[in-house]
Length: 386
Length: 222
Image 1 (cartoon, helix red, strand yellow):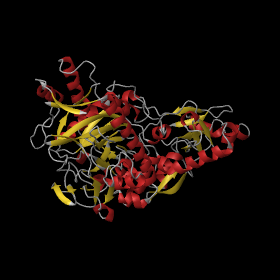
Image 2 (cartoon, chains in turn purple, brown):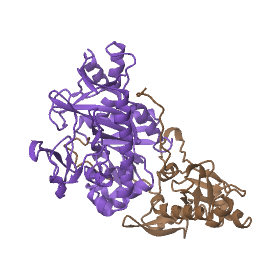
Image 3 (cartoon, helix red, strand yellow):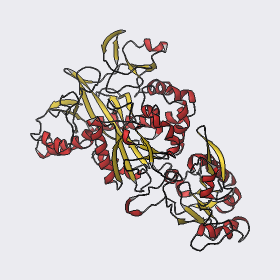
């Protein structure tokens, strides 16, 4: 696994614009960076990333099975008691999940370690699935990469297939909702809508606030059309806290991601997974912050159970605070042993390892200057050589 | 090649998923297909199952228990008995509790078993409910041509044992009407696809903006 400089495609900005890919971050920084790339061997990809990703997912599914049996555990995972039955039903019914992203610390020298699981509302999807792929094709065509160069990335095909299989091949109308103000979120939704159409479904996009409800508790779209299936780029922990949550159980709307995914998309998962599989090679020791064993971790990261974009994170080295980020999130915290991430001069990289319908589907790499991957991170493409 | 491979999707819970979610009123090309496996069999009792399904009594019991257990989650749920009976007929509904709320659901009158879709150790039974008929157009005991769900109710005295309910009609949680084809093997015939999306008929939207308040100013993505 190595990082190397490579000439940028002269026309990549034009291509990004043609795709409607917002390649600047909200802060105005360039988010897509193809002046460098990461190179892997096939063994690093297959044995170092793909196999552990599959194993971690199986572990997580086994965890869900166990967690659902205990109301105390579900509460720890942030599910309000009123929705325990709703979440359980979504699992026992076999509600399909679409996608998720495991963030892994991996530098090619030891086993990949799970940093966290973005199981409910992962973004950075389009750049991993499509723009990274077109980068490889273009660079091979331009002779900048060898003809045998490959990439761990079957995201697009798998997404289309997973949409096709959501209801066992039946075609349906899929509503997709995101918050109005986030360009990035709306781009993710637009891309997923495209995948759903390729799978044969009709799609209707709307904002979360535009969702309506009828007197008998049926969710509706903009034209009063019933919402039978809803992809929501909106976390369950927020949905559960809002006004329309009272209609969820009666609505008979199929949610994607399904309610049971909420059990995995919290950092409270990390100490509970460690309890279930202590010393598993792909896990880092993790404890709830109020557990006395948390302080025994000399080098650790403390993060809120629910936070996004690297906010409110403290890094402690040799029991001293080394770095802290600001943010708006509070509530319970977890402490996790500090991982060794792939580093280069002036920064580090983490591997976003994608799952589609619970199967490993590819990776996207994000680099940032500090140890915390924030919204200032840059997305860097990868290639498999040899 | 790591960027395009054979794509396999697990087949777990196929039947349950397909049956639970309401059909869309406006599905593509007007085709609203609920997946009913070609080898699906319908039974009204454990005894029928045991006699015709080639399953042990224990497996039949487990499948029935699974169907009963799935019933409240799977069934169309109603706020009151009247609206439930309007769909399923007088005396066909029972009260139940759904996540703490009091609801009415159609009674389970049988189960659907598809051996091609189940694990031999854990046969899955899908609950079957009375056929969905308006009380006015399908009176008890009436035989109405063109409405197999009505007609079949009068044909339940054909024989003994397993054959007794040959021709009997049921509806699935997804609203598809099925009946048992004549003959001893209890195979299912699909009679009618659902006309509306769900039991909860959609009236006008009465409120919006009940979602989205938490995330109005931040990205929801991770």
